[in-house]
Length: 277
Image 1 (cartoon, rainbow, N blue to C red):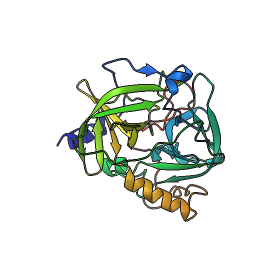
Image 2: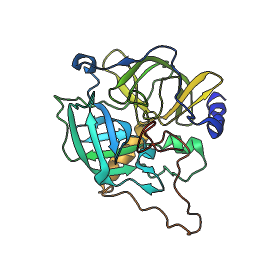
Image 3: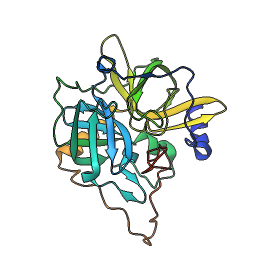
């Protein structure tokens, strides 16, 4: 099966370097370039780290769960900030984060890569909602059967000052809640929204979780979103997410330093800026 074959390759080649593009990305430099994509922004993590995120409500941002872990510790909510439509140092809107939740089924210590990617979804609640007139949130949807054409809007290594749009990429396979696609992603693209357009405005069908380059092929992985998002919203309504759970103490049976085996990493200075596998 195609997805399983590429998942196997993740064990050896998980984003060892940037994935190569067949065609140039479109840099969303001007204000008019951003029209329709204002809800995509950068999730900044402490000093120098970042992922990509997307508004699904004025005060809710989706990103990859693995962006909330790294360096052996969990992210401090106080160190998170969302900057919508950031380009060349200027954001359309930005906010600190009140609460952060990783999907409860996501296990950064897990060895099952398919399961890690399937539940690699995090939800941020913003302290200051972004007005809909500034950035209209995207609806989440299930990718329709037979759908092929996708697009991805993301930040990334070497292109972290403005969003880049891969407007023509495609589905490579689907299985067990996973989606494989050939969109142009790299370090920093973790949590980037994957869109499918069906006549009207683009719908959010997945998030970038991981990627691999195998034999010249560019393959990225994401998850089916609706179930994970519904469960995260329910957790938020229950009052979860005031802080992320503490890691297991070192020396405790089964405990080890958290080093995610999927996704992109963060480096605090220079080069790639993600949670390094």
